[in-house]
Every structure is written in structure tokens, then in C-alpha cells.
Image (cartoon, rainbow over all chains, first blue to last red; front, side, top):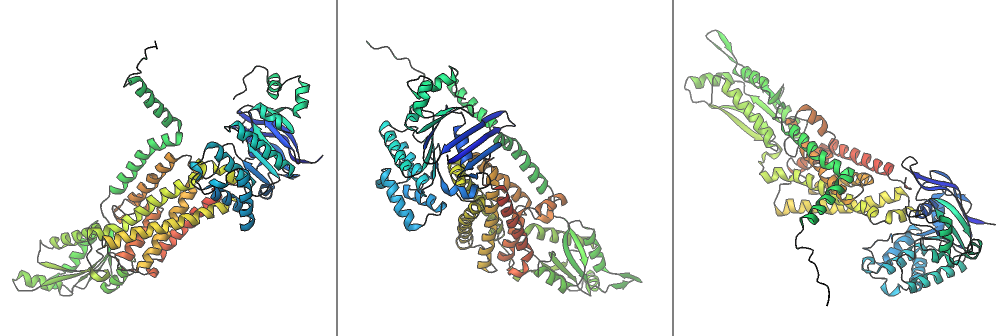
Length: 247
Length: 384
């Protein structure tokens, strides 16, 4: 089996080990799958995403992306990864179009290709009519879509959406997931983090993280079957007990 | 019947108190801000107090005593030597015996001298003749740098006291010739080079710093770090954009100073534009370096005065560097504004060309390279 992202005993500690944001995480994500990385706020999802994208250096352990060590090959691998961070992380005083074109240039996508790709992405994300508008004037859902457009512009092999559907209305969330499916069909791998458990039902596989450790992994059906649960949230609650997990 | 609504009160001391305590708590929690709040007034008062405590002393001057003296009742008398000795004992000036014309050349070439004095060869005889009520005109030639009023006042004071020491004689004239074309400058003329230095230090630094940290505050820093953009490319990108801003600032300062207020520019205006631009760049590089250590806008805004105030105190903007205590003079060498003001004054008031300002430009170049190097070294491709 070919894994596009692998982590081995991955750790990220702060304040001389007092805070263990990620604590021995072992992930194996297959090429072309939608992997939902589920956990409560503060469980280490975003830290993991930031290490996979090369933004954060692990305290110890290894990350392999497309078979290459991420820490040693960060610059080269960054071309194959698109990320939509938890906060929108776009330039709010630039227009939608200016943001997308700026990131296309960061990834080296040239003029005509970038413009054609931007048009297509903005149409799919229903931003085409607002493309000249400054991001600060857009609603939260639209800003989220701009962020996703910026992550897609270089047609990356791996897409990391950190809490991409947070604060998004149900209709838009459904549309997002339809779009995520189409990206998967296009051969792209999607890693989607969320603290909303029912989101995970739509993924191919789920990894449940708690206190920086992967506590369970499998397909939604297999997990529900294993724990005799109706929903993924029930699975999570079974695994966590009644202990509050929000750190 | 609906429930009667209670009023929360139009003014609550308790609510107000909680707002105050919350603000204070935030102050204390932001350790860097809190540290600056405590340290900045202490530091500024120390620097200003120290730099401004001195009087203008040891101003280098050249004296040529051509007085041949005279013999009176069998005793040889040389008032020129007495005058030179008096000047030598005055702490306001530091006398070097030399040639008057060579002294003029030294002053014109900014070699560190501020005045050249010629005591004429028949100085003693003329004084004796005057004492015998003969109508003679006794004149000492003084070639002096008038661009620094405090230094000029010190030299004239020392000369005046030395003349008085010659048995209280007050009939000796001083023929004062101003260096650099002999122009006398208004307060504005003298102030504009320093104000230019201050504006470029404060504004360029502050705006550049705020621009550089906006990336962090807007959350786009993480996203940019995940792209192929390298730290070096990012630094150069910022440098290019902000250097353009520095150029605009320099032009604005010059246009207002020169064309609106009519400040004197004896030298080449384009050399002045170039030097303002170079100094603006030094501040841009410094701002980009400092932006790595600033976490929020409040800290950035505090950084402006933290750099600008010591620069004002130690660069010679308020008092000439020459009048500062030796330790302050030592530290003034490490302030980029010291060299910028020297360059601006040189071009504007003395009409200097580039070749006379090479050491100052070299100093600014070294500062620019150091700050740029620090910017590269402190910018990283990943977060800790």
C-alpha cells in the first residue's frame, strides 16, 4: 500500500516538554483518500497539520510526504501541498482575485494557466461574481471559500483543510463535501480536520486524536461497528469516557 | 403583565473598575510591553540627561601666531603668545599651532577643525600703539564654521575671554569669515538636516515595522511558510517594497523642507535625495530585523521611540556631538543618525560633494549591511 503521508512517533512539545501538543503520533494516509482527522479543540490536530506542511519543526519523530522526509525536503514538497488554515489566512485588504493570484505566484503557477485555473475554481466555489471584491467585505463563509481557492490554485497532490467547514451553514457544508469528493476523484488526497464528529462520516477513513495521540483509526462503518455505535460521536465518547477533552 | 425590568444603572463604578483592572492585567501579562513601559522612561532620561549634561568643550581650532612681539623698557613682550596661551588654557577649545591657510583647507575639507585663527605679525606693536592713543586698527583673522551655532558660540567665547585677558583690552577686532561661502544660517537652515534625520528615523522605522508585522497579525504568516517562498525571498520582497516607501518619505521631507520652508541647500540636491534614500533604507533594514522580535502592534509602536529617542540624544541633533561627555561621544558612533545628520548638514549647509562625505556614507553602508544580514539570519523558513 502506498502512503502519501506517514508520521512515525511524531512529537511536538513546548515549554521544555511541559506541554505535549502532539505526543507520539503514527499516521498512515493513503494516496487519493479523504482522511478525516477528528478530535476536540486542543487535541493536536492543527499542530499536526502545521508539521505536515513543514511550517512547524517536530520535536522528534519523522514525517514522510510522498516518500520524502518533510523536514529535509520542505521547500520541494511545499509545491505538492495546499493548505487552508483554521483561520482564513488571506489578505483581507486585497480582493478575492488578488489573493488567489498572489498564492498562484508563490507556487510558481504562470499567468494564463493561473488565470484559467482561478476562473474555474472561483466558479466552482461560487466566488466568480465577487472576485473583484475585497475579502474584508465578504461573509465568513465566503472568506473560507477564498482560503480554499488559495489552497487549490496550484493543483496540489495533497490538500489539508484545517477546520474548513467551521462556521459554515449546512447547505454550504454539503456543497463543500461534494467538492471534496470531486477533488478525490481527481486523484487528490484530502486531509480534513474537524472537531465536529458527524463531519467525519463523509470521509473514507477517520483518525481520532486525543491529547496528541491517535486513539483509533478506520472507516466510519468499521468504527461504528467495532464500538456498536450509531454515530462517530458515540465512538469518540466511548473512547474518551465522560472526561472533558477540551484542553 | 410583563415583568418589570431592572435598570443596570447608567454608571457603575464596579464595571468601570473591572475595565481598569482588566486593562492593567493585560499590560502586565504582555511582558515585553510591561518591560518597555518601565524601562523606556528610565533609559530615555538616562540617555538624554547624560548627552545633554555636557557643555561644548575641546572644540579643535588651529592658531597661527605671527606676532613678532616688541621690547618695552628692556623687556620683550608678545601679546600674540599670551593670547595663544590663554586659548590653550580654555577648556572650550583645543588649540593646535599651525598655519592659518592650512587650517582653512582643513575646515573646508571637514577634517575635524572648526576655526583657524591668525594673529598678525605686528599684533604687539599695534596694541602698544593703541595704548599710546594712536589710531590703529587691531584685527585678528578668524575663519570659522558657522553651521553649528553652539560650537561657534564656544569658539567666540574663548577668543573673547582670551582678548580680555590681555590686560582687559577691548579694542581688538575679530574679523570673522564664515567657512563654506561665508553664509550665515537661520535657525530653520540649521534645524532642517536634523529634522530630516528624525523624520526618516521615526516614520520609516515605524511604518516599516508595522507593515512587516502585519503578516503575523493577519495569520497569513503560517500560510506563507507552507509555500515554496523562502525567508530570504520574503525579506528581499519586503525590502524592495519598503525601500520605495523610504524614497517617497525622503522626497516628501525634502520637498517640504527645501521648497516650502526655503531651507538652504548649498550642495547638490540629488546627492541629498540619494543620501536621504540611503538613510531610509538603513531604517527599513533595521525595521525588518526588529519585526522578528515584535509580537503585536503595541510593541511595534513602542519600538519607534525606543530607537528615535536615543538617536535624537546621541546623534548631535539637539547638541553637537563634540559637546557631549566622552562616553556619550563614544556611543554616538553606533547611532546611524549621527552619520545621516553629518551628511545632510554637509550637503545642505557646507555644500559638500560626495568625496568629502565618503566616511559617513561608508558608515551608513556598513549599518545597512549589518541590519540586512541580521534580517536574513533572524528570518526563518519554519516556526519553532
